[in-house]
Image (cartoon, rainbow, N blue to C red; front, top):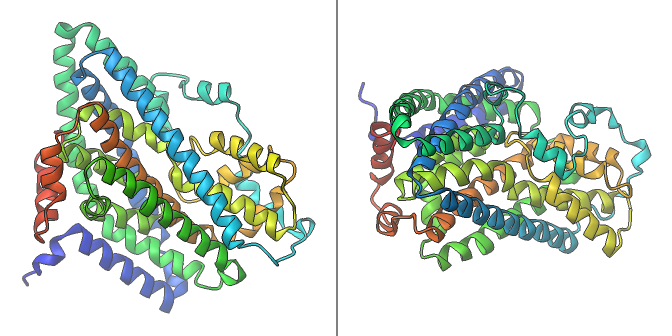
Length: 436
């Protein structure tokens, strides 16, 4: 039997997996809820690859940059962009809450809410100061940075390793060759794992529809609509404007990354696409050193979807529980969110963890109000994850351009492709030159 050519595309396969998963969850909800291990297994396999791939990519990238000064400038520019985008995202979420007022008229008494459902989130949401957050980046052991899979400790170890190799270029050349070889093998393994993406998408959508259905939406539907509107405005107004100012069209970038965006949509997680984003952004003409530094850092410092969610959800709780907030209280809340929005893992449920962490240091808002959102959080995590992935992809291209480390001709050619086979050519390039 000859398989039609369109079915060879990962994009089409993932899309079919999502459709079949939603149908399974709708018509056979009990069976759908049992398929969650398919999604968990796929995400787990990709997360297993993140730490070593990030390490190899950053080390190889640092050795390609001119000097430590260039590395420091790249990191500072990236962090400045991250905090600017986060501030805009927080303000946009706040403005959307004031305009649409999703919690108005609910008149909920927070004392009657069941806060026991928040236990699993509160255990991970103890408030952290800036010093405590910085210290948490340092792993207990060198191998410990890879054990938990957190990106920031791996980023630290990679920077130190790369600087050490630059200090001894002669002796470090064999080590660098080994790292590049390992990177090629890792990307080849990743290409094999990504063939399971349609199966992971199938399991994730079957579980979501089978477990939650539409019954969980109810009167909270306005909050979901508000979040999707705010995220759409952020992408369409803020990111699209930045892209146009720098000479490329955002919608073409989204078309180029459509497979990754579908995987994020299906799994509600940004982590499964991190290794592929590294390869695809390098294929666009961005310097591998800039990609290796900016993208992993963005996964912890540039979660704009989570930032929008934090202000919108906090104001929803205030409106639903009839808690008036003064201008100074809102300003304090925004300042706290600039910290709590950083370092949240890009997986489903991380938004609730960050929200609990925020409310624990704002006594005016009841933490128990988060219980209102637990039932529909799964439906909102897709918007948060998609917004953050798109923002980080744009940030890498912008910083690359600022550092004169972007091949604009290659960028224009790759994003300018209109023929149906363009995506397949990119896929072939990633598989044939995984360690670019």
